Amino acid sequence: MPAISKKGIQMPESPIRKLVPYAEDAKKRGIKVFHLNIGQPDIKTPQVALDAVKNNTIETLAYARSEGSEEYRAKLANYYIDNNINVSANNIVITTGGSEALLFTIGSITDPGDEIIIPEPFYANYNGFSTASGVTVVPVISTIENNFALPKIEDFEKLITKKTKAILICNPGNPTGYLYSKEEIEKLKQIVLKHDLFLIADEVYREFTYDGLQHTSVMSLEGLEQNAIVIDSVSKRYSMCGARIGCIVSKNDTFIKTAIKFAQARLSPPTYALIASEAALDTPKSYFEEVKAEYVERRNTLIAELEKIEGVKVATPKGAFYCVVQLPVKDTDVFAQWLLEDFNNNDETIMVAPASGFYSTPGEGKNQVRIAYVLHKKDLIRSVEILKFALDKYNS
Image (cartoon, rainbow, N blue to C red; front, side, top):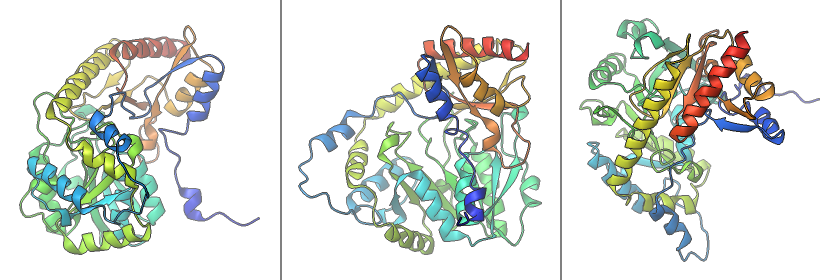
């Protein structure tokens, strides 16, 4: 029998999706499953984006330009300028989702055996993208005790080697919801300039910041023009996860030219999704104000309910729509599967994402889960009620 590659064997399962078969089996048994495991917003996609696809008159669905149409990139550049990020269309490469943007970025700046430093816990697919590229993730640990703030600069410094090529952050963070302050971004600026590294910022949740706090993009800092790379996507901003349109933004011309070669190799992003994404840029700002207000209410509801459960610890997110929750169990992978296979409360249960998959340090996060507060408030309240019943039964 032909052998599978070491890379294929090492490729991690998604902690967000690996339990799907158990959820499907539960549904077949008549169990209602509340999905707290995946960042799929229930917010409606802007009508202007849907109408652009529905009402277009395309007769031949042709290839798009490899780096995305000039019209879309120019319009997108204006969006960034409105957000204090002074770029042009030539600084942008359109990708098939933020996932492809990360793959192109890692492929453009690293060779097999190189290293990228990432504060953990981090978006689980960073592990997968790095494995696919033969790159080693070097974690620097942030903790629930201080709400997952940026680790000390000394913690970064002692991890930097000749193989280190970049520091990667998610801001606001997935899975933590942590929003890095301008001061923290400035600290990262100093360290990447000192060691001549790239600073990659996954900023797909830029719009979702709470409590009067403002997002600081790595692209807005002077002096980082050759070091800063932004990963972005329409998935969360416009509730368009299925469009699979993302982008890379950088003022480093050599890097952008290299990324375009990767874009050419996969030919082009999907044409209909480009049309929808370009139209989505006409979404009024009131849309985001309403969405943010809704997420703040959901966050507050979720945390208030979780804090009522003895033995549960939760970090308060300042952005995105996730939080990391520490549970009084030894292994949340086992617990999350048990919730779907062996437990229900009045024919209802919940699906969560075990947090160990958001770490690369072995053994970290085993008593934590990520919860996405993408459900209506009444469903969040019921979900936490189910969690309380489940913990009581599981620990008895």
